Length: 430
Image (tube, rainbow, N blue to C red):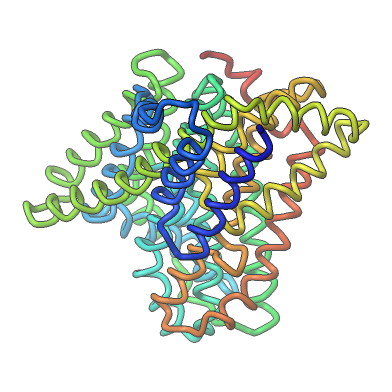
């Protein structure tokens, strides 16, 4: 019976996760157990679907964007972005905290990964903030919360994955994310400013106009990169997948010939780092695809859709339920497998309620990304705590105002569709 099959799948997945089996393997194993339990499905469906989960040209962009981010960090572009942010905001009370958010926002246009950005910027910024007199827990929480903007502002690995799963235009998804991404960064900066003023955190030395101009010129190659990528995609010179290769070539050129900070050892380190990041994402996608196929085979999305349409009367109520569901899922599951599992279920229901798919993608993507700073799992908070050598509970406590601001941004994006739909309509393109 159908419910028994889905019950076996859900039960085996829950048990494997409780046993701390890595999520990619838990997904494959639970699907395999369900197939064996059913008996009338060929076991070969498991490797076929795992392979199909990786068989998308658009997924080529993921390793290349990760590599571009690594090359930027090791090639001196990240340091110059930090210098420019400090020159801009250092003069204010809590300027280093504001500079942290600005640096994360500028870096967001490059790597597309919150975890990578938290690690790269955290290694530089958290010790600097602690040295300047900021609390360790606050420095860690701020860095983690600020870098969630990484996968929102384009280019974004999260929205590339949504594009693969839903056949939506990657360019239009990127454009839809610009305003919500900037709003998120603004909210984080506001919280950083309020907390810094309350605690009387220090100001840095004021930089004059000439110093600010010098910092801008030093950072110009890094600042130009997102502009180059979006302009290239928009004018049709290259598509979203090809833009990732352009980003790598650009980062290589700047690191080797402009800043001259890349050497063979750093190049090898960048290749290893991006390969590891890619392996994690790809294994999860492959594992999630088989569970997704199983749900489709059992027509679970249609059944859930019928139930939701029958019991939820309005789009407003549906979006509220979706927000709560996604926040809960994002807290315990990485956004890769969560997207693969939820997209086939939620997008058809959203379409029946007449919700714009690009607007809905922002709600889905940002909600799941907030999970990176939602205790108890909160990968970005864990990385921040590790770098800051701060207790986890202290970092979690310091993250609460940032989490509240992030949820406020999600609610605004949810109930003001124009924030997501205006820019794609103006820019157009596929």
